[in-house]
Image 1 (cartoon, rainbow, N blue to C red):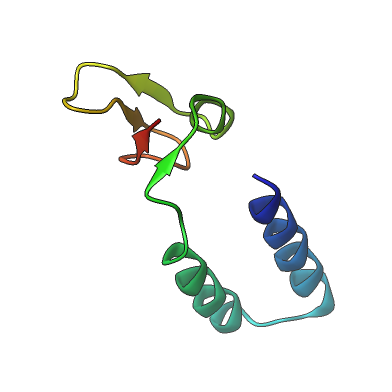
Image 2: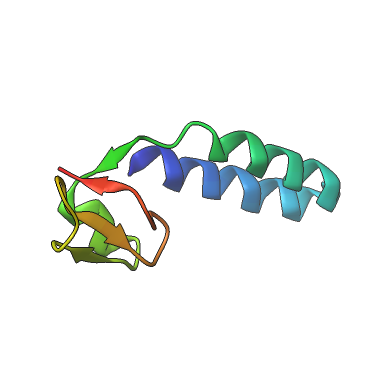
Length: 72
């Protein structure tokens, strides 16, 4: 996902510029609320997860960045 890569670059730049951990933690908490309800199979595996097809009605991403999100 392009947005996550951009945000990772922003956080890395901010850390190098001397931003405190409190500001980074607040920004990370805000980012967590914007995650999509579902991900593609490629996004799941690229994020370090595996696709669990035993869940009904939709498969679920297990592990990694997208843990618990449905896969469509």
